[in-house]
Length: 420
Image 1 (cartoon, rainbow, N blue to C red):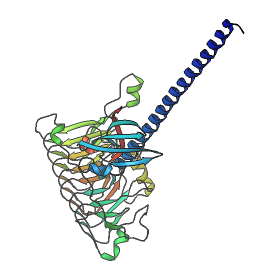
Image 2: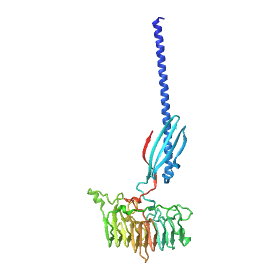
Image 3: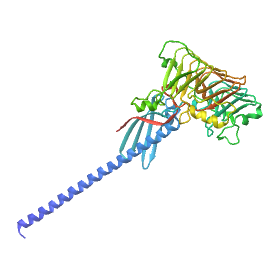
Image 4: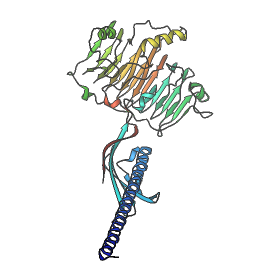
């Protein structure tokens, strides 16, 4: 073998060695990169698990976001060979910052997220799911019937204070509840489950009158809706406040926005509001906020359909209810007062009655009295006296009155997110 041949053979051997060494080094680097990537993925999965499990705790116990954040945190916790830990801080009752650290071997991933309480969109405060609810005492005297406008639902009543029913002519198609510091009394005592007779009985053999949690009832800040100076408004005689032909408006290109369920017509009265005769608020969603008192001595309706007689069959009443409620079976009228609400005489009222103070319904004398809607007293008592029928239909919307909106969280809402 010649010298040149030997040189070529040695060179080839060196070249193969260099190539093999390079391939080995590349394989080692690829393995290291793959291991790093694998560790990063598992570390992030662990951090994400910490976020998700912390959010689950936030949803389960939404009332202490500001006062006791430690209960939502996780200490170092193993997860599929990795680990995570979370911390929770808050500077506002409805907002929290969650930091989750995920680790796997020598890799760490950090996720920071800010969450706010997600409220039920467009939902009403819990007090509006009762036919009658008082922040203090609720007293029923005489012949009082409280029933649901829809026979498939209940007309529940509640008092955060004492709930009292007097007489054997009181009948409620729902449960009667009172707050932890209140009491419940039915006279005669043996008539509890006759007085309280829900259409949908979820209480089994237990009594239909019982203690329950306190109901959070809002206070309306009427000054926030002030659009006029203090002045009384008296509506007397037979009056039609609104008669809006939405089909005509739509057909002629006009935007039928005001007076809809999403944007009800909002009227402000800077003094007292008094009505007599028959007031019709037709074909419009309507809310009135009154700085003083509301006194009703006649009818407030949302339809010109004749009011049935109390001796008419249920089918006639069902038709009248349908004419005065919207397609969902809710009332489109809300009457809200900072002062007392007092209703007297023979009347038919369609709408939600809400007072920051006392609600008193006076009847008797054989006159027919009917309320199609609901009744709320935010600070004091409700007194129902005499012959009266209350048919519970929930108010359709919170409209522009923020205090009426629900403050019950439904999940959480992501505000900010960052990963490191």
